Amino acid sequence: MNRKYCPLALASGLVAIAAVTIFAARNDFGLGRNMEITVNMMRELALNYVDPVDPDRLMEGAAAGMVNDLDPYTEYIPEKGMQDFELLTTGKYGGIGALIRQKEDYVRIAQPYEGSPADRAGLKIGDKILAIDGKDAKGFTTEQVSNRLKGEPGSKVRVTVEHLDGSRETQTIRRQRIAIPGVPYAGWIADGIGYIRHSDFTEGCYEEMRAAIERLRNEGELKGLVLDYRSNGGGIMQEAVKILGMFVPKGTEVVSTKGRTEESRQVFPTNTEPAFPDLPLAVLINGSSASAAEIVSGALQDLDRAVLIGQRSFGKGLVQSTKPLGYNTMLKLTTAKYYIPSGRCIQAIDYSHSQEGDIRTIPDSLISEFATRAGRKVYDGGGIMPDIRTEPEYISRFAVTLYAMGFIEDFGDEYTRRNPGQQIDIRTFSISEKDYDDFTAFMKDKKVPYESDTRRALKALKKAAEEDRFADLKERFEKVEAELKDDTQTNLETYREQIIETINNDIVMRHGYQAGVIEHSLPNDVEVKRALEVLANPEEYHRILAEQDTPRK
Image (tube, rainbow, N blue to C red; front, side):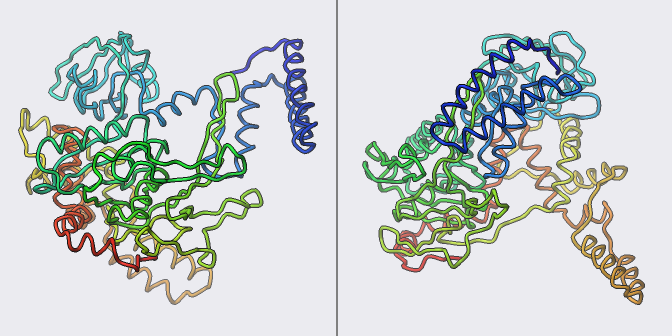
């Protein structure tokens, strides 16, 4: 949006900036010089560019450009991005508490959060949003609907929906502060063995974690606990320190930070007596476990306090701080590296020369050996290596494509229409063979933009052969291509088991929310099974924590 600005007001603003420039110049000639160039450039663009320009847009572009060549975590957050940043750090926003998705001309409910205003109002997965506050919602995008559903806690919004059975209903819903749980599930996987899924380190997740463990302990004898940090991207470091305080002695140094400034050099000990000092722990990690999740899992490994199971973690050993820039804008910047109890930093990517275009993984020659408290070998420079390595389980790209295009949810809507009032067992539910036949029939007229890895590789070979003028290979490639079955119906059979499980999850979600999907997945989870084996065998548990040779690769 273009705006008109009074030259006098612009000049006054530039004078203020110039004062800062003079101050900076006295302390750092390079900084002062570059600030003056920036101010001069903005002035020329604002006053002399052929068309009116928006100084706010200029500033956003300049600020984004300043941090573009540093690291992926340093960024300028403009005023319009502050709401999303708050959601990222606190997990809270004002609204009705529902995920939404687009289908044709309308936006539909994709998932109401359990106990949210949307849930209490009876909104269900698949409900079509017809109107908001009396305004026809046909043609609205998900962003437009989201903006209208969000608002100040305590305010009201009137929503008209069409349910899957064709009935229509209008509900006046009072918005509230929606808190997305950092601990979406806690339950039992065997007699005496608890399980907790921890999905992110937002504000207050320590209290959630503490309450979940206390609930399990009140329900029965807690002999061991599985902490699942797979795909947990991290968050607030202080929450990680408080969580570690439940399991290690008071005063234990669990993480320290070191940067260029004195402010960035800090040591973080636990400051409470541990509530569960001797509870056997198994921690699950994978390649998407990062940041605060790596602090918790890495510290528990360094202190020989838990057995880690899964795959090497992401390797984010950088600490970000926020600096207010005025006018409700902020700079999130990397200020330090963090170090876990053994003294290692697990950062996997070296950004120190990123401005010169040199970004690389830490080479093996620079990886150092460290020791846990009991003397086990551990290493820096590449994430946390689990004590027990497992192979990752991947869902096929074909199944992911079906879900991303909405076909799974659309079929789930049809299934729900045909089975009104159905009651299911969350853990054991699965659609029948006939149900899957119905799905393949449902997909007959659907186009799925999918190519198998084999077809992709064949295309690359054909192109290389053409460039190298190997004409005699053309006929062979064409023969292989003719034999290659890669159509939708063939793929529906090839990836049958994965697609069935994806459909199962969609239907379970409609009965048991996100927690139900997690519970449904546990019986067949390879890493959960391995964790259960370790916790059920005290000899193996203690042997692993005493081994001197922790895997490196």
